[in-house]
Image (cartoon, rainbow, N blue to C red; front, top):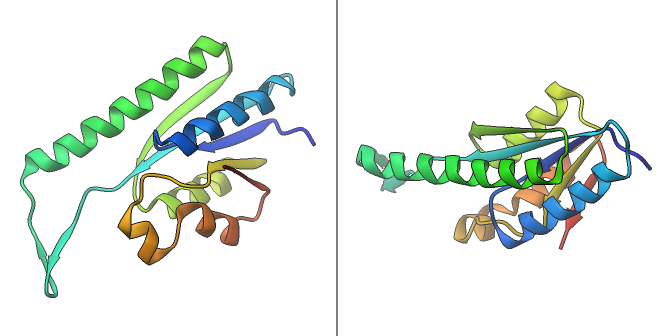
Amino acid sequence: MLFSKILLAYDGSKASNQALERAIELAKVTPGSSIYVVHAFEFPRFFIGEALAPLPASVNKDYYDLAVQTADEVRGRLEAEGLNATVELLQGSPAEVILNYAKEQGMDVIVIGSRGLGGIREFVLGSVSHNVVQSARIPVLVVK
């Protein structure tokens, strides 16, 4: 099966780097294909009881700077491979961002790592890859 519009969900984790390698392989076997990378990030939120505790602006800036660095790293790797690629840095819930982007851009396949950088949130709420697989309307390749 050949895919011309490949969506890669990337967060800089070991699993997403393995997914990047698989997306590169898919793109190389399909002439004229493109890789669209989505790095979805969320600013941290802390609750005290039912109230949302404000965070210093410096904390949000640090999260944003890390997200930009992650996007720049994957962009550099794809440019080094000589592939047609677009890298998007989007804020929001990762699974929702990935699914919305895939639908809006008419992707053929989603490539995603099996484990990301979610930590305890992933344990409690379910992994991003699991949510994407359950809700996607197109094929999803989960890379371990």
